[in-house]
Image (cartoon, rainbow, N blue to C red; front, side, top):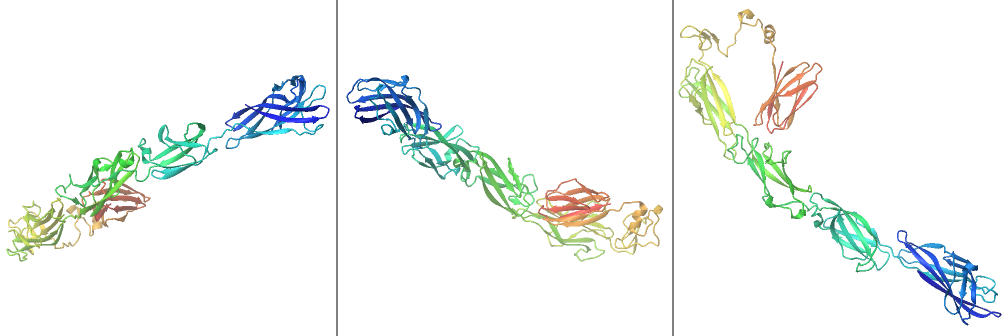
Length: 610
């Protein structure tokens, strides 16, 4: 509510002198949502000055204007008369007022212009209020500027960083509508308060702390709501309007992850249940690495609320994330085990542990010599001793491996006798033996991992053009007769018949192997050999309507591969892996089988087909 007073006078010779004051009352109705005030006229009052004569009841003419709009118009009728007496303000009986709506400035201020046009007339026309506009007196309407009640609006956010990383500096900037305004910013995630600022005028500089994540152990990004309340003064005691709101996405910095100290993860050789169980250290082709984790050497203080969620170990492309944390078999002479600890936010810390792996290969035999000899070891076709010599090589495994070298002989077709120890590279005599008996000889190198290299050969009898058995029941050519009721021929002699021996007589009736197979109704087995080096592939061709088997074997302790295959009449190849050796990959195409070797050893593929 408010009022404004107008004062004026006029001078006419016939009427003398008079001065009048007019007081206009008005109301204000403010709408905060639109920042507008509606003004209405609530009262009109008159006061006479000068002689203070009681002029009785007079009509009032004219209008009241606000910002040029007429809110009240009075025509002087009975409803707008005024009882005018003495020097006090006398009310004018007025109708309902119209209204005018104005918009406040951003600082809440607003002024309007009030204008009064009109006056009071005595019935006889002798007294007038000189507020008439225009003729007959030529006095312009008075205009008075009135300041409405100020309604400053709440400040707005002019800049809020869309994202921030913990530990970074940020700035929040407000546009305020009054220089007296102060603000408080409140940060929260959902219903969890994070931080409330001290009062600030236009800008808040703050650093995002890691502690905001303490109540949120399972996420590394927080969607934070920033609510800024405007206050009328620096004490922040009177709130202005509703809070201004913005969003801030906070990401945990890279340092918010588990921190590890020496000894947090310890890889150790795992040789149990293998032939290398008695070996200390890593053995290529046998050992695995087993990792133990020590939680006491893992610090979670930098994670602010997170805890250890999992451990994992990876090596040679294989990852293990459950206890026991054990790698696959180590296939190379050097390897790296990567150990990882992951927290509940998915943040992880890893460390690489290089492993020193002892190279290993199966024992090998070389420089082998086996022959009949006399007692001095001199070669003699009719000697009664067998002289053997061989060299062996093996992996020492840092002195933990050993390798025995032995030889044994047996009458051909019989069981081997006790093995005799050999010194590598040194000849040794076996015997005495019969000059007229053939023998099988076995040389074997066996290491501590129970891998063996073996060599087999035969030692024939002494040479004879023809020799009968002592009992007369056997005869041999080129050698001594060893079996009753048998005609024997030395293995280094060829037998030539004048014509093929008929099938009914126990022969094949054929002059060639292919003809013999055909005559006997047999299927001919085809055998092919392929070398399969480590980290390489080999293509094995097949024919339409062919079936057979492929065996992959060789060095290492990774098992053997057996593959059955069948090639259709159109060339499509189907396979079945009877066994599945580690490190051998298989693929097929038209009339082809491709084998890939990553086992760490050179292998050999043998194809057998019909």
